[in-house]
Length: 162
Image 1: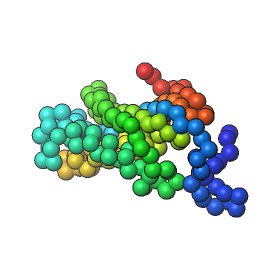
Image 2 (image 1 turned 90 degrees about the vertical axis):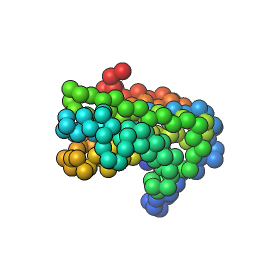
Image 3 (image 1 turned 45 degrees about the vertical axis):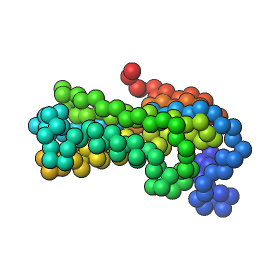
Image 4 (image 1 turned 135 degrees about the vertical axis):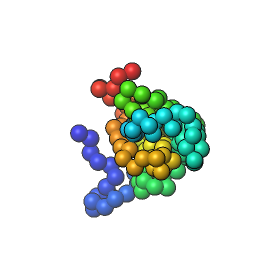
């Protein structure tokens, strides 16, 4: 395992100095899901919930979440992101919405946390918009599935199915 870099010589938290790192194109993909009752999923699909189009609002929220990552995760660097996209797949068989965020930049540090935050905020927004219909929804399985660029190179999660 690599050495944890967010601690100084005294064992105190720090934001890593990336000033000596080369700028590279970086892409991160994260996924997650929110499970709900089939009746609630039908309301989402039919766009009849009182708060509006759940997936449209959640898509924008996921993008905003990725952009604001450094404001809510203490040791994340503020980044100039060059692209963010949030996708949804409705899985009727398992009564869930699958969420994917793809985040890109050209910089000195990666965008994994931004992708993970984008998925998380999108899922939380779906919950918020549907909670009047159901409070038993479950958010889960949020993980990084791939990243490219930077000193550590490429990563693809071994159990990720394309």
